[in-house]
Image (tube, rainbow, N blue to C red; front, side, top):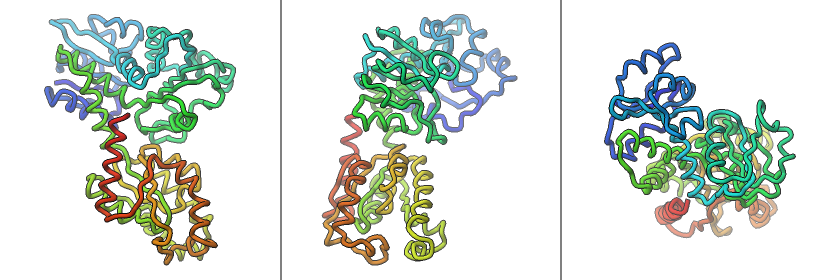
Length: 413
């Protein structure tokens, strides 16, 4: 039996990743262990190999016969495997980070690097960056190195690794560093994998920087662990295959666009094609408010509507694996755009203005003209979207085109 030990494992991706990487070569389980039961569990040896997560990455070391060089340098273990009658500890997070940095073309060699955070992931990053030839590796944290409030003094920084949990689901509003403080920055890596695109990474994208999320690192470290378990080499191609499968399963397909552009109809067709459940943000609003949107506008005004819409947007954006049709004005708030992009591939669904209905759409009816409304919102639609698709065919054909574009994009990540 193989598995992951930790204290709380409800959101772990480890079991499906190991199954996919090895085609189910071994039984892999999630094993929650309380601290006072850890010693007895490890002494029992009722396992063939283990992955280890917080809070036990250091606590397991006294129960092992040897450590690999990576585990020695980092001072923590995330993989336990057997060779003969000896139990050996490794830290495959190092292999995962090396692979992820190389894959996105972010080379630390000769670069001045900063790591935010001072926990176990920070130690891993420090070892890897130094090993790859970084000119300097400096910490920004509350307890070691430079305090967060003085991070701007490190303005020669060229590469940043976020090793804090700031921005991790469900607390997705966190953002470890203001990237505009670093004028020489070329790229960032965020060890967080849920959500796929943290605020930190979204800011990096807006600044045109190289960026990478922790999901590829997660899969790559699992591949290295599986090699330890099986005592066999696996093809690196398995990392990319499983990474894309995971991303395709968890990423939301988000439709934005003018009122009446066909987001709901195309969204339902896209849901049927992709197998992802469909969420209509306006329908969720009506259900929560207990009244139609025009009535809510008439009674409470647009500002009240936008506030509730923003709360729903944040709620939906943190979830995964959905097709989401949004209201026409949802993109007007930057916070909404950030929430939609946390786990979302955003499609700007366009339609000829003469074909946009206005009945039952209070903002469209109140605007001086649809053209004026469209031109006012166009920059926000473009800022939010990954791609633009014209709704000029059948629902099924437009949905198929969106899915085709999404799959093409997956192949480039």
